Length: 203
Picture 1: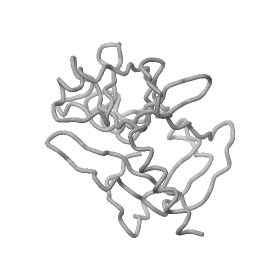
Picture 2: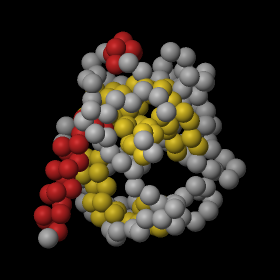
Picture 3: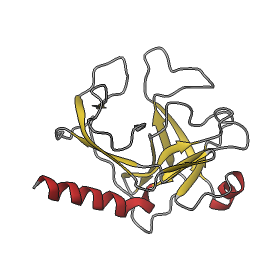
Picture 4: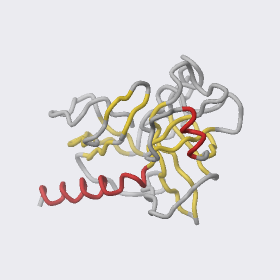
């Protein structure tokens, strides 16, 4: 999900989480309000780029896992994914073309490219990001996908390796430009410290 506020308190009543949803026209398995948002303390906009673009969201109530609601694994320090990766979401399906009809979850297979390729396209970025795109021309993440997952399959697990961050401001899936993703494994300390701190505060 895309977070446009930074540690705001109180959380807007209009913000909520849907779980177990495949079509936005159908009811979700669970709806949860948000009790806490923690964005990365070093998050910032730098020209056209977003640095440390990650936030954690705490739901107001726990959920029970089922065939429709499952947790994803987090990456290990030595994980290095390239292929068998996917992005998903309900964002635009083209430049200023909103998802219509039954608004079913969209999925696209992507390849994670070498870091040097991204460095040429977006000078000044660090290796805390991933650069990924589809091998099919004209396909990629678009408006409305920000905050969504970049996942890879590994040994039967679904691992969230990235978070949709930003892309070319001139349009979606342009030739020569792929999407930029927050590299999750670079922020495991932030994730674990935030979770631990919240548990101690709630004890």
